[in-house]
Amino acid sequence: MQRRPALALLVATVSALASAPAPAIDPGTVQGHLQFGTQRHALRHVQAVKNPNNPKRLWILLTSAEISVKEAADPAAVAALAASGKLRGVRLNVDAAAPSVNELQGALLLGKEEAPGGEIVFGASGEKFWERLSAGNNRVGGALRYTKEAGPGGSPPWAIDATFSAPVFAK
Image (cartoon, rainbow, N blue to C red; front, side, top):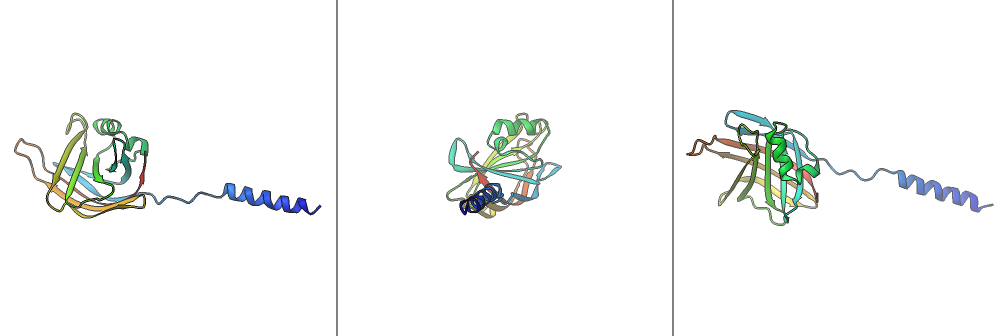
């Protein structure tokens, strides 16, 4: 007869553990904007994913509209969303193991009227672009303030001013 109370306690404990909520991942946060010509776009959403083609690199997407992790890992899907006018933002490409404040690579995510394919790829090195950039423990964070003057071919000036922190997803 003593087995039944012990068994009932065991079943209750296992049920409680099975239904306990999993530890939550701190969501990503971003504050800032992307300025492209005269258009200013608030950056309110962030996703960070490992680059599917090079897992040593991270893609950090700072966007005006929310996107899923799956979309963040698919540059064609993100470019299509941007080209259709559903979002604006930037995809930053950083070294996951050794992020460098002296390297800036990525793509501006823009509409068809600004970029027919939905994005403009950029890259620069040799000077400090980031105020802060860190990656580790499955999280990335940074503060970026960068301005690009108008180009000689008539390309408009653009600027990114953003502070972010986000969990890093594999895909």
